[in-house]
Length: 132
Picture 1 (cartoon, helix red, strand yellow):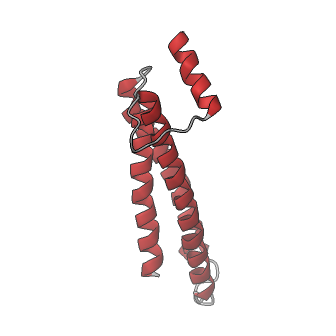
Picture 2 (tube, rainbow, N blue to C red; picture 1 turned 30 degrees about the vertical axis):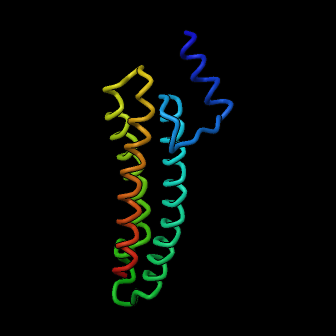
Picture 3 (spheres, rainbow, N blue to C red; picture 1 turned 120 degrees about the vertical axis):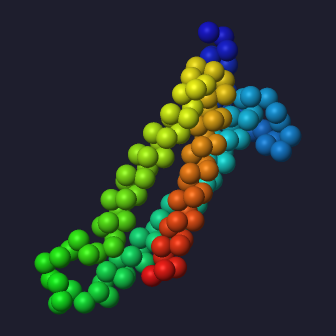
């Protein structure tokens, strides 16, 4: 009970750790969350670029050839895939963290997983827009 309260108190106070030096589990969890938040922010930037590029590409497509076939548009397909990807990422990482369920290491495993998979998605979104 006391340990859980300390973790909650630390999360509420949002402590500052030196992520290059601090090696306590609390610091590792905090720094992993911080890394994920930074990576997630980078994902949002890349998402906006890629989605805007896809919408521009859709606008250039000659819809006179297939005026009723909106499924050929890239932007709505990308949006659908992003929504599915978010569910995939979160479920995958929760499953990975479940092996540590209830332990102090569970948040670390989940945040590291989310960071890794999010970086892969950023690279994929970059590749998509480069191909267009």
